[in-house]
Length: 416
Image 1 (cartoon, rainbow, N blue to C red):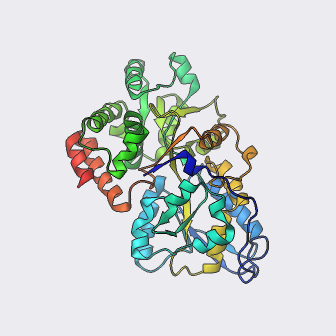
Image 2: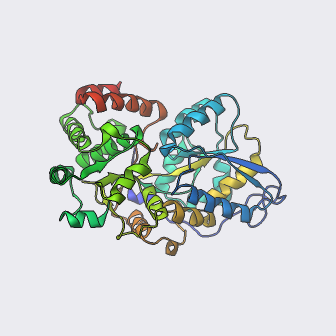
Image 3: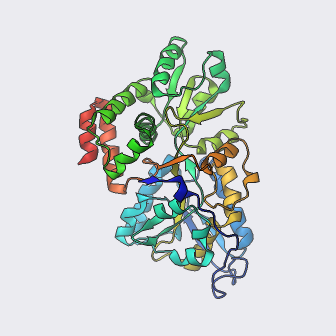
């Protein structure tokens, strides 16, 4: 799935329409002030929960009569939360709203009838005029829309400690081949070239290596069928991924993505590949951007924005439907997004948000996201380009690939 910058950046009007009077007041808040909303997410760790707390605070201010029930389940990229949620949905015990990613990640839930079409909210709030066209397309299935985006994240980033690179006379590598050259020198000095975490972070690294080696068109072709997984370019990229992985601590990887980043902060590792939610986490460590930490596009992917978007649904049978609608309105609002994103390390999904609120790394991110020359592609690991079944097949194949390093066998596993 590819997204042109022209489609992703179509600005809209500035007037926000509320729901009919029977549902909301003129300011978009609940008119009866009654109810409760249970919101299921995986934002429970430092750098994530602060963003959720800011969003909830704005929600409570606009909806003082609605009790917020935080049903967050910890675990990077929602790996644990998604399992818990699947059990609840299968047992007809849905929360009032749950977190997902924009794109194909939601396909199985749609097929199972777990979520409702919320186009009526898009119409009432005029969100189509305020969101990038390409993002709306990524949220649309057969003409229907099943979730509301609250942000835009970037996946293809390489984090580092400026002081460590200065000590070793290095600058961030512009290609993965350059990274491997640096890795050899770092190893000689007792520095781990690349820290990594659990399986999903290894998938995230694979995504960034494929993007850097194949380019935006070749990477996009992996998901629309234009690029052959068994062709020479992909096989060479997979072989390079193995070499990159060999320069990591994959054999002893433990914990989640935050402990992996901690090694970069401590100076025991030179680099870490992670999305820009890392910015929020590093700020919770009281670090200053460009001093205690810095970032560049992952090798080979400058001027490419590998995007994902956290979104929220309206489950079929939500116990508190009207309160759930208010939560979705909050997620799609300017005030909600401008409260949430500066804390979360992401930029707003809306095009009419207040850019002055985005400083440090986020000032660079929002400038690149809104630059018409930036090429946009969708994240594999975070739900944009692969549905749940295909993503699960890739997970299974990758777990074997990390062990046996067989590029052809991996290609077979992901194309069955």
